[in-house]
Image (cartoon, rainbow, N blue to C red; front, side, top):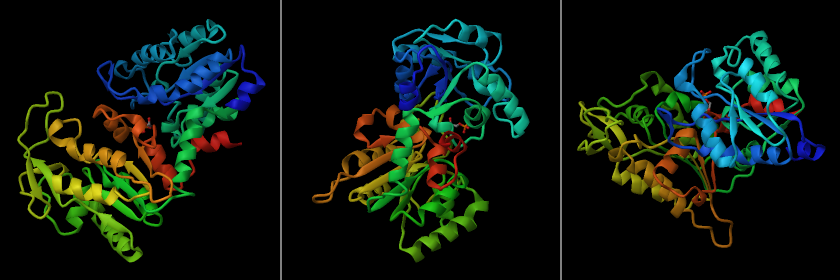
Length: 408
Ligand code: 3PG
């Protein structure tokens, strides 16, 4: 983006593909981290006199307008953060978008409606995606890719549009990639990875990759019950992906052979049913050892002994990557595991004598949101990534379409 600005963007229409896919409760934004993360790029372009056209997806609408996924509340928040009015177009490539873009003055900012209201955005058909990218390209003269959270998607605005306009990477993408490089090419050891979240099937690729690179892998969240079952424990009504047991068993064996330490919880916090997150009353949870999970409960967080165990495994790590909450952190009865990991990342990493301080990265939409929702200071972490799937796929060593498109 520096080169682009140096060449002169004054008076030019610059399309900024952001990832403003933030958690909402109705029209209230519950975590604005992704909006704040793209502000420096937008501000830089606006200060240089560009007419900035920001666009993003939100949620997974089905290729047609759907009011619950409107970006209107995000336009208001973006305006507050930029300290300027952000014009909002009620469509992406239609009359409203064209009129809004036409009315932009130098240094002003507009936001388009949800890109995924158009089926061409996510289409698997190259021609359909290309046709939508053509329409988007007609709105602008330059393209800046800064939606790091979406670079793993081969979508029209991420992959096809940069091929149609002179393009550059934004400040956020540059920072994210520099950080992820430190987790792949230049890792300081011991390297500990904490993985959580609901489904083990979403994490197979990254576990596979990390088995070759990490020194310790700590597992929590809903995915842990498949590991516990693979080790012969009964898991009651906990989330279980039976079909993944062979893969998980293979990982546990490979880890042993390679000397990678796999750390699983020794106790869990459980309850007879999933808690009501809209009305989070006290649920009287039960703390049980992993070898004594009753048949009629489901595990919803890691337990107190596991919190201590996990913190001890992070205490001397030089590099920590954490993706995925340890439990249902949205309910106070099941937030302690996630809170303990966040705290361990802040407290534990003591710089080895004379060495650099430990490098801690929180990756993933959910874990990044959890850290902020639980009230931690984001500056206490080395980096909080805006990418969930994107950072995992980067760590898997995959080619990310949105980065490849910006490279040439
Ligand atoms: C994310 O939240 O990981 C990104 O915004 C991508 O969203 P998607 O998984 O719906 O493509």
